[in-house]
Length: 103
Image 1 (cartoon, rainbow, N blue to C red):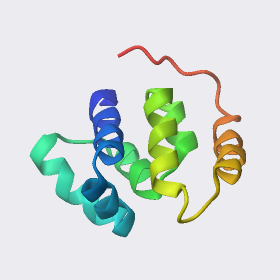
Image 2 (image 1 turned 180 degrees about the vertical axis):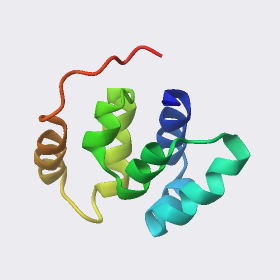
Image 3 (image 1 turned 135 degrees about the vertical axis):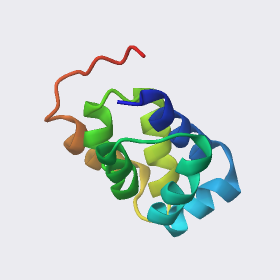
Image 4 (image 1 turned 60 degrees about the vertical axis):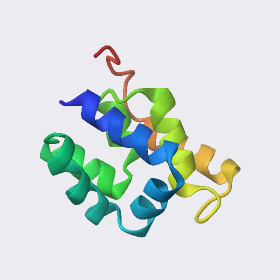
């Protein structure tokens, strides 16, 4: 797994309003456009980011702090309240054992 790239894309989306807007508009296009300039994600990483599959990203060992900020940025307030996101995030992450977060 290219944890660095997964963490980097989540960090970049969270750090800049125009980057966040581009991701929210089309996660598929954003990841497809971002990847060639920065590095190659594995197929399952690419799909998890595009689907915003927090459980899969957690299970892959994404940085949990970056993952939470990414989830919050892309979901609140347009789709979920913070309270709803907490419930959704926990439900997605709970089935997975604690991954190895070391990079």
